[in-house]
Length: 131
Image (cartoon, rainbow, N blue to C red; front, side):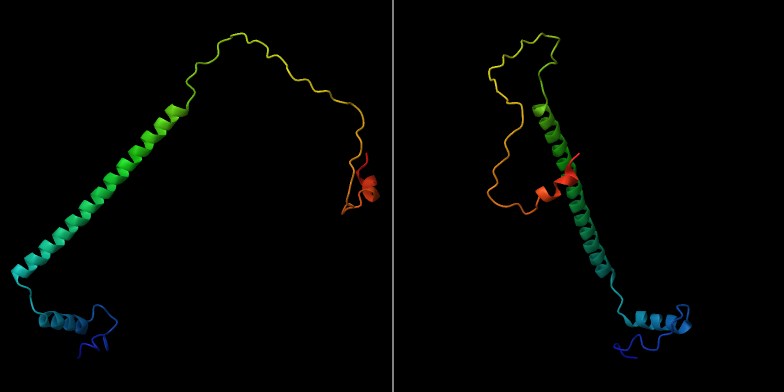
């Protein structure tokens, strides 16, 4: 059996004896690692795991500090924007003098002058809108 056709003719049943025998042959054909090689691989794996955990700790710390800063900014903004004046206590207020007077004419107003013809003929349909 060649390396290219390694999966050809494999049975579909995982509990098949032929498949178990093939796995043993493949495992036996692979060279065994020495204890030093196992130790090197284990050391590299442990270093990578520690590096990943350290990076995750820094992310968690940065998230915590960011949330704390956001809360402090929100508290500071609230303190700066709130109204510090005490509530008004039944103090009589002086009436504000009226300084401007506007004359209003009561009655019918003049119809506006239309320079362009209307898109809708309002006069033809005025009966629809009268009381």
